[in-house]
Length: 220
Image 1 (tube, rainbow, N blue to C red):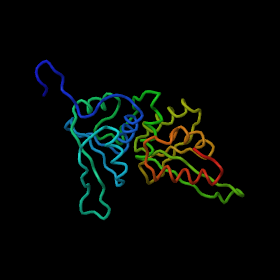
Image 2 (cartoon, rainbow, N blue to C red):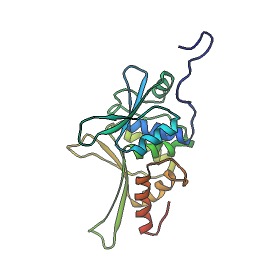
Image 3 (cartoon, rainbow, N blue to C red):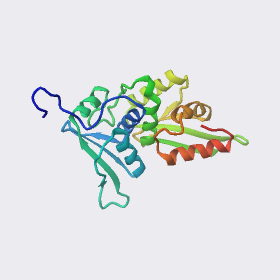
Image 4 (cartoon, rainbow, N blue to C red):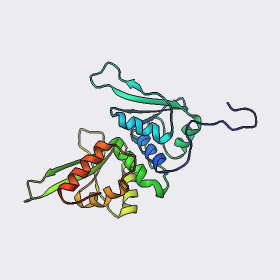
């Protein structure tokens, strides 16, 4: 509670920027909003991911362990901020969001920063030689979500910005939907995600992408 006549102050400065949008992308994928309507947490096995999140939101919280005792424990940062929690609700995030998530209200100016956070949280990039075609090297940029409504929203937003459609897949025994962009569309999408050398990102994913693009004489 703030003093009488003053507004309570949150830990997070709520102002859209490239770093703020990136953090929202991470929360959308790897974040969790507590049912107490106050706490927000992010879990990842990659310390760089946690460090990026803390840095983007200007947090001072310490990093703890998650799933202690497991073979591959993850890291977690958790903090309480009622104002930021309410903001997240207002843009489309909810507790227990995995299968009910819809669209997220993100300014168009920062959409690709948000998308890069989304990709670092639940995205994949892979490449291979296609045996069906001679000298055919393929690669895909993918975004995952347990919510069909959210993955369809993501697809429509990317199409609106870049005019590429991608395609959505879901295996019979898997509850996750995957939005995939093949080689030609990835070459349009990836430079938008990494539009500057200094953008915050998960370095191992960027390095992997740059290595593949270099092999075909392309660059971000």
